[in-house]
Image (cartoon, rainbow, N blue to C red; front, side, top):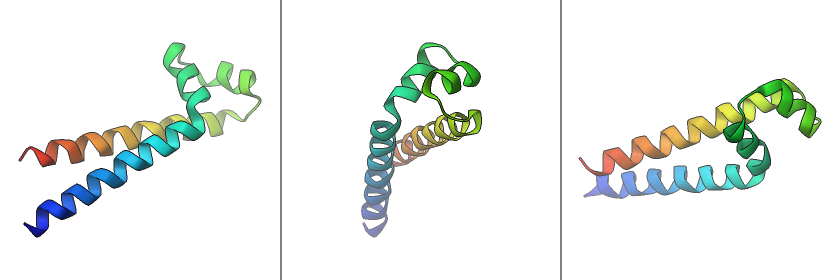
Length: 75
């Protein structure tokens, strides 16, 4: 039973983290989903290519973590 509450907490944490990060970086993430390419997004948004890369990488990791926790709940 204790394991279920830990899983629930982890799932909530990763879902909230994903939503918060997405909200803060929505424009860049949506640009990448529409037309992948770090350089053109960097130029369009006036930020360094490495910042765009970090935002996209972190967003993908947040989505992956939330999905893994979600899968663990079904076990």
